[in-house]
Image 1 (tube, each protein chain N blue to C red):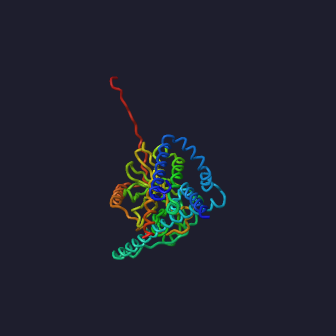
Image 2: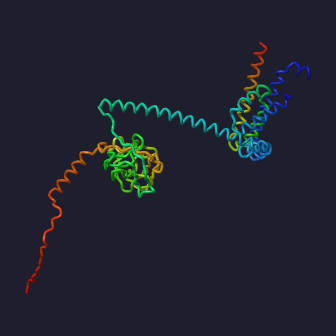
Image 3: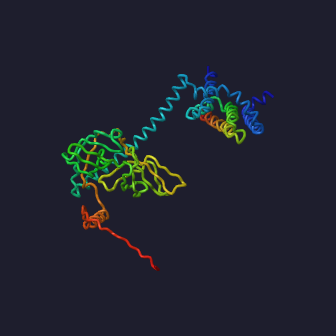
Length: 85
Length: 305
């Protein structure tokens, strides 16, 4: 059930980005990243960049997703430390 | 080996994260080297989501239509609310200006002009050209040349003919009717000429910032708001630009008008001087005198005979 709901959120993020519903995509991305990690968002960002033809220039979304992954790692570590303390 | 891994779980995690980042970067670099291949793969993978997105945007089914119409209605509501706010503020300012104007008129001893209310009983196309017939005449105090208003201050024409019980009003938009007009915005005084069909036109040199919505006043009538510029014809190859003006209220929907007094039309000193000169010129002219015919003969001599 949990896996299904996370897959549902993942698909919803993809649809929200395609529809330019950034007001929906941003909180979902934050929720998904904190719950499941941002590693699975990197392939989505690569696919989206390729879909919009950004690989002919600079794939900003893909690079941003790698950066976001690193940031979420730091945030999650700090949150874990906060919980332990 | 297992023991080493168990002793260094953090190191394992760090290695895993580093591998993920490196793999992502390598994939991105490969993608930049082969953009077409990656685009092709992406179009296949994202196709279902693309189809869903197109379905939401263009389908005439119930759910997409509901979402689209709701979004459009929300946007329209916000725009209308903004316009209403602006209009309310403008109304407040207008109210304040009216009251201030009234107070100032009171200070100057101006008690208000007399007007006669009249109903429009015939209009274009029942009458030729831009003429109106009203149900008030000389018995009710209507004078030839008096200004005719719609509402409080919008002037539409002058009384052209007065009978005991009715009058004809020649509209300012009658063909070849000319009046001096002041255009707010560029703040220029121009000659306005009627074009017919409820439309008047002003001619303004190129370079004057004439735009749709500029207010047009007739300064020789008190008060003399005429209308707004509704269309600007501006061709760069021509030395002049034309502004077409139509009153806010269409001619066909005119029902009640008010007729002012001749005193509301101010005449400039120059006009009065010219009129006096014309009268003086005519004072020595005696009409209806017929002198007998004087025959004239002409003779010519040919020199050198």
